[in-house]
View: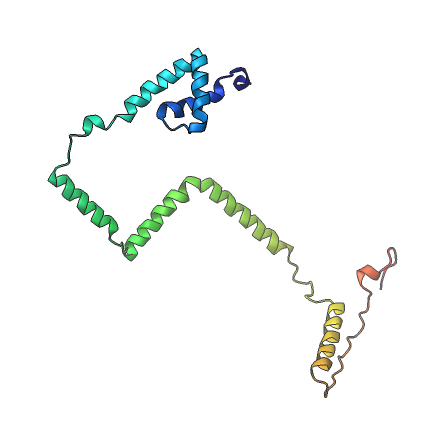
Length: 185
């Protein structure tokens, strides 16, 4: 809401870019026209301009300073060390892995503990949901498997024909075919 009440708010970023000299040419004329007509934006532009002039000339007081030979030698040694390939030993690898663990896991130990607890609950529910007395295959599935085996045998070897041995019919019909209220004995 404040932005809508402040008509000059959208010019603030453009004024900073204008003061730094990085405002594109196609926007520069409009922003300069607004600065000429608005006293508040002109004051803001003058403040920003005074800061950018000071910051843009920061290197001038230090132009006469040159590093000595010792500094040049140290820089050359550091650059050479940075370009050499590093072959960490096994001990250094273990140390870096432990550092990684300390940086990544230790700050989030409550999250990791919570995730471990969730996985333990999922594992316990999964084991408790398994029923050891449940048969892995139903008679209908076995019958369909034997029929498809017979079909495959007939289609792959035309000289030999094998007939699938039918299963014995189950004593009770499947649950989907039972009628409610009638007990099967």
